[in-house]
Image 1: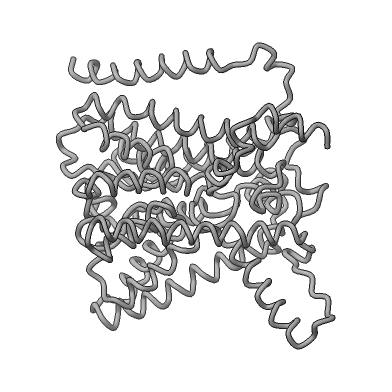
Image 2: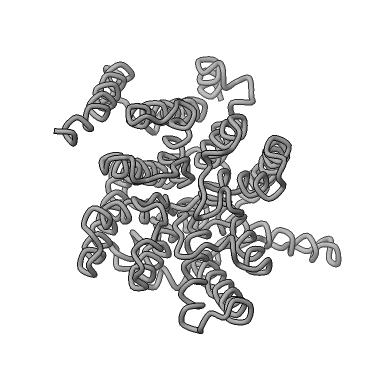
Length: 464
């Protein structure tokens, strides 16, 4: 009977969501093309929708006895696929809550992939058009003719990958419930686990390898995966420059950390490779699982993991962070600037996948990275002052804005919890998680006065 009672908060959340959907639904929505939405409207819709979903997601946590600010933290962490948790004792909560934690991440990952792979590129925002338009070329860029079809194609890949991981984990004897929750959190790049010790609780190295492989897949551009799985363009993955860099970064950091684990922690070679590869994948894909307590590793290993927190995986993937494509473009931009010092009149176009990237895209990418790191610095300073701990403050800032989840140290490390942070720190972390997941775009738009006058903005755009 108790299990039936536990579904009450989810019924309530569903009813509220349904009512809000009916309330905000346009009467002519069947004939209204999403292509006609302007930038300001898109920003407003994205920001309001994401915040409402996070607020609705609070209901189950409050029902199970979690105080409001912690419930909001856990809800935002789930929807934004961050994986930072305030839970300490997992044994006092029912299974249905752990399913909701993982399922909320799966929904959040699904939503963000469609948002950034199918909708925002049409608005030429923050270099997002480089995902499907500017880089691959106009003919190949559109996965399918309409946004709805594009979304459906990405959903199908996302769902199939989830089902495949569930099946494989069950086949290798992981409990069914745990397999479902783990898979939902893996494919979404989330990291919530039904076990307080994450994958360490299972004590099976095979699960570590399996989850690491799916984290690697989750970090690949889903548009690229579509071309591989559906259009059978296998050569696309070899030609894709970002994917090659992704593989090189994973390989390089895995090797370096493996060597450190062998020389400084007496790991054997197999164990060091497994632990290094898993932790590299969980951070670069911003998933947040743990197969070892890396807070106890030596400083050199932790520095390498800390560097990965500033990268993220591929653009158009389930991961958070800056994304490798932006870093690649900035590196090429810097290289061009150095070349122009020696040859001021030289023309050095920036190319990705052998195609010239528009200068507007490059500028947007640079602006995005600047704002991203600027917000990190500001929030890190605030968190350090609030917590009076440099490691906790800095790692909380990057772990939340990058949607990574665990940070460093015993308090918020992979075996820790954000529960003991000051309330102010939790609010800052919530802010970071939301704007980090939405890649700053709606937040930066919020700072402009035209954002607050959608009708005026729409008329101005029409007149243009």
